Each structure stands twice: as structure tokens, then as C-alpha cells.
Amino acid sequence: MKPNITIEFINIQSVRKKMDELQCTIDCDILVLVETWLYNNEIALYNIAEYSGIYSCRDSKGGRLEIYIKKSIKFSTLKCSSSDKLLNWLLNHYTKYLMFNQ
Image (tube, rainbow, N blue to C red; front, side, top):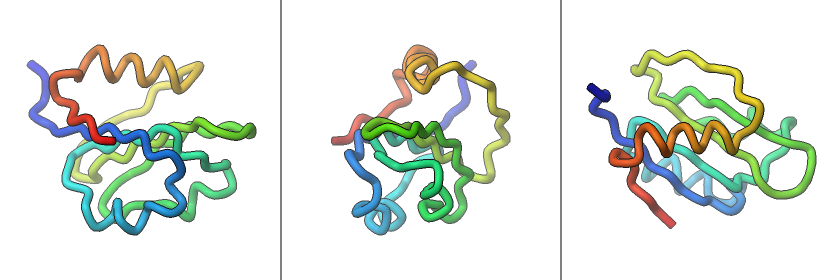
């Protein structure tokens, strides 16, 4: 049986100008952001209170994946060779729990 959690998936297309709005409107257990366009040295600037962050950044322009999980949820991370594989795993296992948002 899958856990009763809510997952929100957003293609954010640059989180830099949208983080304040996100922090005010987030209403899910797990938030998946794609196309955040952040670099490794910027991650610490984009935390969300009450959430743990998992990040997949790269040094080139575009892309990037961030997953924010409520601190009340116990989880462990697994090493994945690419953020695409991680996203595919999430979509394959939790599709019926996702709320797609554009």
C-alpha cells in the first residue's frame, strides 16, 4: 500500500523569482520542481521552511531538479546517475498522487 501523501510537480522555469510565492502557497507533502535553473553555489539561498531539500544541479545552463519533502516525513536518499532517472522513478511509482501544475 502506498502512503497517503500529496505530491506537487511544477515546471518552475527559474525558481529565483518565484521562491517567495512558492513559500506562501505550498500545500503538499512533497514538492518536485524541475527547470529550477540553479547552480550548486545557490542551493543554500532557496530553502523552504519545514521542508528538507534534495537537489540535482549541473554546471551548464538550464535544467535542474529540486525535491522538497516535509520534515515530518521520514525518508532516505538513494544515489541516482541522473535526475531524469529519479524523476521517471517518481512518476512511475506515484503518478496517481501527483497534482500537475504549470
